[in-house]
Amino acid sequence: MPPGEILTERMSMAAYPTPLCWISLDTPRPQLAAALRAEHRRSGLWPLLLCDSDETFGERCTVGVTAPEPLEHIDRWRVYDVMVRIWDGLVQADDELGPAYDLDVLAPFDHTCPGPAKAGNLLADPDVLANQQLPKLVDADTRLALVPVKRGADVLTVLGWSGAANHVSRTAGLSAMVRSWEERFGARILRLGPDRLDMSVAAPPQTAEHAAQVAAEHWTFCPDRILQETGSISAYAGEIRGRRTWTFWWD
Image 1 (tube, one colour):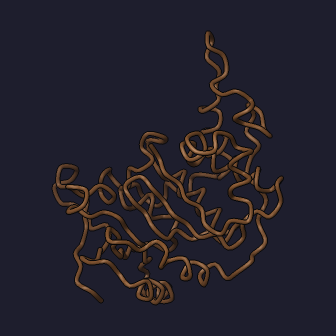
Image 2 (image 1 turned 135 degrees about the horizontal axis):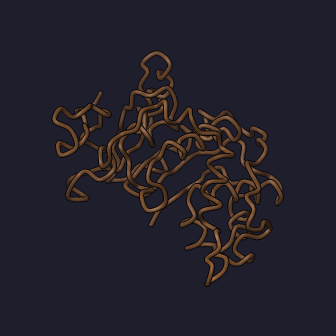
Image 3 (image 1 turned 30 degrees about the horizontal axis):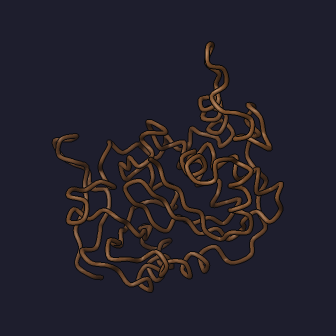
């Protein structure tokens, strides 16, 4: 293993900060991350590309930014409940101004949450595809992290990550959604940054209808990605149809 260090909660949040993950001091080789992924069941450590350099950003800004949530909080959420709660919050009407979003933005849906999409059909082995995508995500600011979790989706909650803080106050619901994506779409979290998340997707939606249903989930997960780029759920659906990577960022 390369030289590294243990990242903890910030001292200001706890008298005895809890260790959260190990992180390499230098840019990793993608082959090492792939090898560690294969060892995950034995080691209990999830390999993750992490952008959290205090040299680059001035201070740690991905890990330990907020107090980590217990894993049990993820188990409390169903994907449908997460979607409905966020969807309703996004589109709720103001008594004077009316609906928050025009139907053009929500098309082909309306102000009622459509619920989760059906599962996709695997086009590749999820872990093989994840390893193939890793080299594309390694740059000078990337480090290798090892996180003590059973599945990648949980890193959003246990690391004290605040990237989506302007969207949701806690991340357990987002982890619950990613857990479901792991199962329905063969998704794997590859890289996490201060306000960005990159994933591989082995069972992406193949039809326009299915892509729209998945896009509705993404709208609740990360509305900035849709509003500030494609402008509508339908346009975004065309972008992710058949695509084997998903990228999210929060403003």
